[in-house]
Picture 1 (cartoon, rainbow, N blue to C red):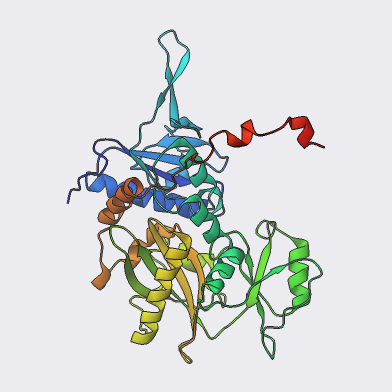
Picture 2: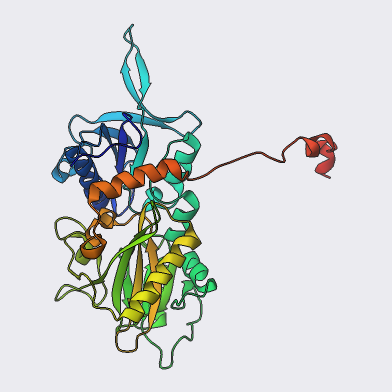
Length: 388
């Protein structure tokens, strides 16, 4: 199988890692993407590793995961990133007189494989926008919304989608009256992935104690919602380019003896990240519920203006037929390649090639200064007078 690159002979960059609790999973996704592109002759591949120490280095795209156990692998070459027009990634090279000089790493597009942290919360996206470098995945605004569980829940609720109530937990807050009798609470970091730092707490006093004690996952805020043990996690991947399409629905299965919620270990520690996590695929959903979830996934895509491949997670009560939008993962593990199977099958390299083409055809942002014609400046009095 061979694909024609939509960007000609310019290298495709694959960026992975980053200062995030999901650093290791991001490496797995990035290496899968790089290997898939190499295997089909997509063209030159530039693998860029974002270290835990927030440095960028160029690495061999054919490396195995074990090469990153101690940080940057042997042979890594340091890169400098410039977030301004004409910027991007630059590599040092020996100058003619022995002094260091730089060459720009020319990239047709960048496949963003960074999960969590600044790679998925809009920080990286905004920097790439400043540099004018096309990239896959969410825009800065879409990434920020998807990472903020409180904001995303509010937006989904305002759009009429079924959601569970959520509350930002602050010291001394009174317990919300959501259910009678009250349910246990599920606590989630306000900003973070779908399974790291998740806790089930029975009593509100313990919720407040958890927030007061803090910790790496609670430092930027904690969101509480009622815990519904009778629900199961159902997920679907979606993309908007070249046309809107959905993957199969999958029901995540919990490992025997694990916690009552789907943990980070359940999802990611099976050897290949999300690819090897236990699940029912396709999920045995009644046709009516599947239609409702499909419509909801399309609504989420419109609300966040999503690009690339994303995953929408639902909570489903099979006994009653009730369901709720849980969250959106704008850069899912393995880019959800495991969900594009059966009647929704898309070869992974094709999925990636379409993402790269979308990065060019659907720019992440377009700025303009229309209206800034100097009228306000000409009519302004002195700055001193504006200070009173």
